[in-house]
Image 1 (tube, rainbow over the protein chains, first blue to last red):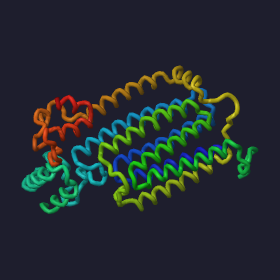
Image 2: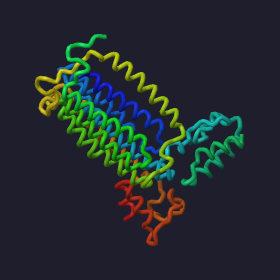
Image 3: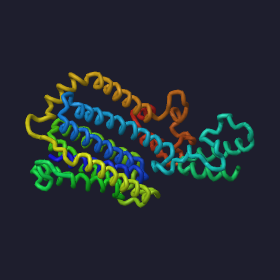
Image 4: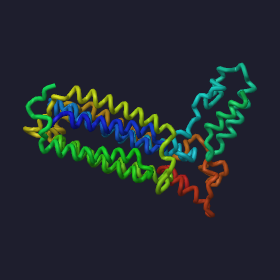
Length: 154
Length: 221
């Protein structure tokens, strides 16, 4: 068999998964795309193992390891997605912007208590109060609202 | 540029079968990442992963093929469907399945496809897999190499699976033990899902909570 067939199929599958990771909004669909990318890697490993006739069977052993690691990854990933959905009421990736850096407050991380920026205490107090008010409501998307308020206070 | 003996334009039967199954696999993968119905995406993923199992069989990697069917088609897709169900994914078309950066993603994917195909085709134009002789991936051969040369990574992997299991349980527990929250007050108004209506006997939150893991069911009692 020509080696180009499995290599081209693996490349196409990998790029399909790449598109899915970048374009999808639901976190579970992103996990599906990651599975597609991992399967492309597996196909490459198997094809090159058969091509090289490796005496250690490194390709097929590594394929088994990759499958096991992918199973662990999907379990952990789904647990994280379920926890985020339980806490935030959404599993959309672009609604989770708590750690995004806003332009107006470059030190505004999601806690705001790290004490490194003690120069403007009033701003921090206002920011913290409004942030806590936002984050107590799980059904709104706190990220953009917090960013807008941080810009307004600064 | 000259092709070697087997000839590029006279494919063998295995190559034709690989090509046809590959087309089905790639089509299913494209549908997985483009369909707007979330459950259909998981079902197309089954087709793509099953097609890859057939490709492994055609590459004489028999054991990998059955492991693929067992673990991917059997458990990973079921986990994904459970995840879709537990996050209350809408049945039917959801218009916001794709985010706003879809054109950028399409451009990146097309550029990556072009670059990868160019490199791969240019590099392996004259490489042929010899599928004759004894099969490379039977269970006997795979098991022998796995337990003769790869024992230490295999055992390390079992530890990793255990760690992942414990991690998933810890993540999906309702509360950490040092966090006195809704554990003793199931109807606490400051519970994170307090906006959701609670049943008249106070178990509306409990049934939802039991879905998160085994920790929820014991706390209700």
